[in-house]
Figure 1 (cartoon, helix red, strand yellow):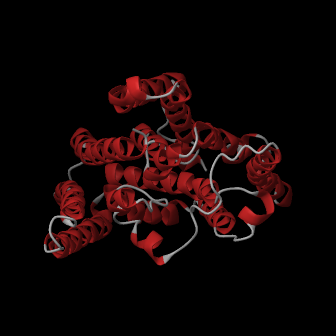
Figure 2 (tube, rainbow, N blue to C red):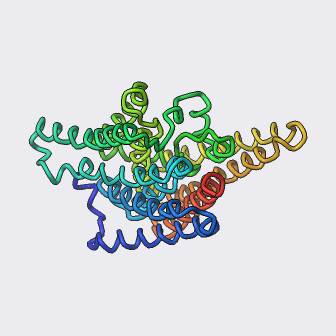
Figure 3 (cartoon, rainbow, N blue to C red):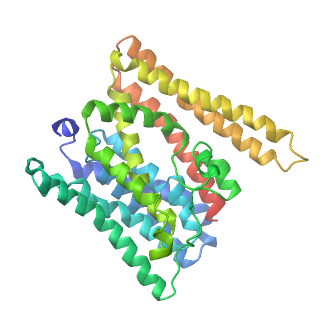
Length: 355
């Protein structure tokens, strides 16, 4: 796995502190308008957001060699749709969301505990370290239930057709009150590039973690047996998807002429989603009186965010076409497009569900 650490900073502590500082500033921005109206227990939310973001940052650094990629992996987890949506139930749920990435750190860095060349022993240790966080969460909720402390309702987070549609329109789902899980808009294009990089680098460990996390999340008996809200289990694949986005960022920043088709395809994918959202908004503008107008505006905003991401991908594609590295320009475009996406969407979700 040497290729994943070839560009690591010589000062990992400084990278963590820098990321933490930005997370803190963003958490203050999100919470400041609501601070005076929050209960004392709600004022732990900014701390939970920062702790969870740094935890996801640390997990992503195992596979993502770019600080920018790891930074956005942490931001997309802790300031993403699912983590912010869970804060409307109980503050204890936000604490659990913040702890889960740290519980996965032993699994991510299991190569430091056991030599990967030991074969079945190494695989057994990895599986065991992956199962431990699941056992911790299940036992914790079981104990809380026995003391009649219900952090989240077990009816929330079950699979449906609307849930999968909501992956492309998280803002609309927030307003409708049916948000499930997923990523923000520009990230959907980076998922494609992350898949390409994962295949090139043969990072099967990350792929296996995502598959196991999905298997845990979709297992139906969880709520009935342990009393755990399904949303909690979806946090595990959420973390790995955020790491996947970090891989896509690395691919976008370091891509060469050979990667042009993938960048172009990802940009066209975002354009297609943007056009689809803009067409969908027309149906709601004609809705009875003014009731569909807020949804129409959200579809228009969603379409604009997809188009914004496609523009960034397009400019980087042109740079690749002329065989220009210009890392600073690529990084600036990525930070602007993805940063605006996270900034605007997280602000909307917090104003909607945590106020």
